[in-house]
Length: 311
Length: 287
Image (tube, rainbow over the protein chains, first blue to last red):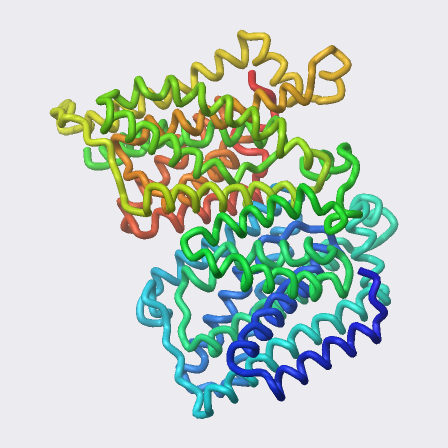
């Protein structure tokens, strides 16, 4: 996926503008899904791709953002402000979480990051009236037409995806990005030459979480309803990874290409088989990993390093 | 006396948890794969036992033998033909692969058996009573069977050629290879054993816990926790981790209410990951 930077932006801005102007509800929904996947995968890429930490915490940040924003709006905070606050809360939470969890590596980090969403789900389900418990929360309907809403949410998710891509481009060219790359390649060596590894990793996780939480906050208004098993669903942690693997981990354009591919696959194949959609998604993941090595190329490392990194 | 009863319930639960975690711990510790399929394999074992009991009247503790053999074969094939291809890849890739496989298997089970809860209903027996303490018979029998399976597996690890080569590969794959151990085959055997243990655990649990694809994630979470509490790949560690989790959940739900038992176990898991990632039994081998 070696797309020229300006070609990427022309395609991205062009398709968002085209959809906004001429898209009907159906195409706007597909476009919004693509933008949501792209935003999640592109921001996951900061910790998972550039830094090389297998984070399965996306669902935790997404759900935290969704609930922070929904609860805020129920207490009278305007929507746009609630979205920003949710992003901030997600970022600060991830920073603190990262300072603890990012001392773990490999499988241990993956498991720990996976558990955070499960823990949140239990806490929010048992949270009584404040969180709505297992029944979830309803959000106030927006006083605009459904077409205008569809456009608004497409633009909101696209803005998140674009900001995440801009941030990724900045990271790649910055000192911070060089530090992350060093950590990805050999963390011990990076620490030895003076990279403040813990601080950099925690910051990478926090930046990634800002977008996941903001996406969750927008998602809550998009659906007008959230419940713990939906917004903390483990699929929300796995799909960004699959998206990135599809398009190319550690690249800026990869997550966008992957988002188009995954959303297209879901729309064409998986949605058609209602009872078997897990089978098709599962099969797609297995085939991707086994037979699309180009999607995961540069990601496979020698056996010794993989073993060492995970023990 | 109430507290003693709570503790006893915890111990019963702990023995069962150890069996849930054993196969998962073996695969993670030796093959270095987090097998997200483990929970679904346990449910599959439950369905096997349920089918054998309702159609042929075979007791689950008998059905676990053929299920164990089938599990070994299935796990062996899966490792040899699918997972082997990503052995050199990063955690992210292997984890996503087993996640995809799990999605597939779990959805197939929901499609084939529906999400309804099923249970093997054995003829009811009088609970065992001693002083003011009572032990539900079915749960006690399952616990005894579960611990027996873990102890037998431990014996297999220490007394047989296969077990010794698995232990050797766990300690150092390169050295084991140099000593003439066929490492890829040992990985396949370990994955087979892990799958076999999952199906057996499912059969053992079938008389006491409901069977449905929706409980697979819960079993997987228990396996994770037992594994991290006890230490990877160590069967005595699995027993220790299982008992610790069982007692904490039992005591925790007595004081805080049963709805918080799960939250408590996740907090315990995170605390162990952060403070003592090597688990209770340290980083030693199987001995």
